[in-house]
Amino acid sequence: MVFCDQCGEEMRDGAKFCDSCGAASGGAPEQSAAKQPSAAPVTARPSRGKTGGKRLKFILIAVVVVIGCCTVFWRLIPKYQEHNPQEANHNLFYNKLNKIITWTLTIPAGEYDYIQLEPEENGSAILIVHKYEAQIIRYIYMINSFGKIIFSKTIEDESYSPMSGKLTVDDGIITTGAISRRCATSNDDCSVFAVAKYNSIGEEIWRNTYFENYDVSAGISIAVTKDSKYLCAGFLRNFLYGEEARIHGNWTDTLVIFKFDMNGNIIWSYKKNGYTQNRRNWNVYENENGGAYFASNFDSAANIISLDNTGNLLWEKSITENDCSDNQILSTKDFNSNSLSILAKDCSHNLYFVQLRVGGDEIRSNKIQLGDNYDVGGGIILDKDTFIVYSTNKFVKYKISGENIIRTKLSFQENGIVRLIRESKNNGVFVMVTPNNKNESTAIMKLDYDLKKR
Image 1 (tube, one colour):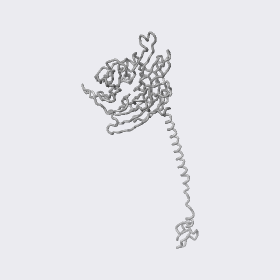
Image 2 (tube, rainbow, N blue to C red):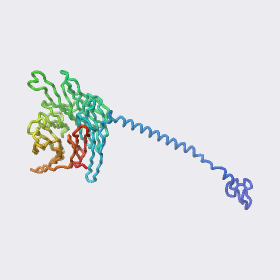
Image 3 (cartoon, rainbow, N blue to C red):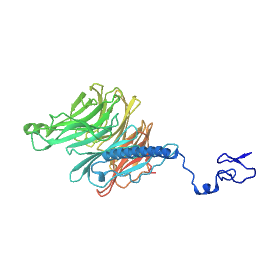
Image 4 (cartoon, rainbow, N blue to C red):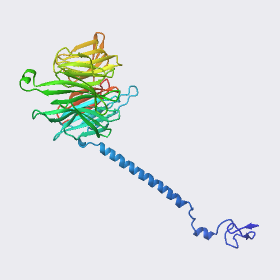
């Protein structure tokens, strides 16, 4: 007995069609199958509604993220964007054996009043630029270890001139310099010592002034200590008039070094009267006992000063033999808190490479006579026996080996004048080359220790 698959009625044996509904044996009616489209599943429409909701939610989240990123990026762009350093000729080279990285950053052509580059422990650096335009515009940049600008700030207050800056533990920047003002006793231009703290997106958190009873004062060097506080060094000046000026000169100078907390409150300070006219390469940093080392040209000599953790003088040593305003400490480096090496130059074209114990006792002193044709532009210490100087359009590496001094001329050569050499904290050398005329760009380069352009 056979039953219809469509209506279930009994079919005659051998019948091809159902007598009840007309369906073909084993299926639906042919006409119905041809004319009626299949019905959509009941669950299809609700399913599409859920998918569309998820997509809409995802699109809305993406739009919010893009708007947020654009807002942050816009805030990081300085007011005078056209003067940003450019990552020109930016080539990365990676060597699996010694991980050499080389890059070049160019500062647009123009007339600059001041350029300072300060390396950080993580291989990055802070760049401070004062540029002449209709007025002097001041910029602060953070450059990462690959030569990329990751922070930029235009100092909108025309009176504040930052001279030195360091990265803080909260990824902000602490700077020191001076705020210009009129002198209290004359119409001359004076200034007051200032420190300013910025957060990671360039907003000024606080700004303090110090030593306002002096006619002229300014911060020159700043450092971050292991306990997340700060060291600062600068100068204080009072003008003299009448008989006092005739006897003592036109002014009196005072060196000041002080430590302050994260809110700018002074913890201790050290002052020393003397001559501070040449303030190139002033450098303050923490010593092994939580105090301070200060390297400078002070009283016409290249000096190193050591203070304890309350600001008291431990010792002071003059590195150069003669007194001259162009005497200069080029580089200092301490090694495992056991010794301190100092590289200095004097006015008579001599180099001094001195190694001291932490107590100030001399371990070794080398004097190298360069001759009148050598004009040393900068230098860095590589290790206890080796240093590099830039002199008369070439780099020379010096290695002390017993009584012998081995000189090696390095292959770096650039058109322009090398104004600054700094050691990168993650193995390498920062070099700044300024052009012979202001219509060309200034280049800041990161090179390996062999100073070979790659």
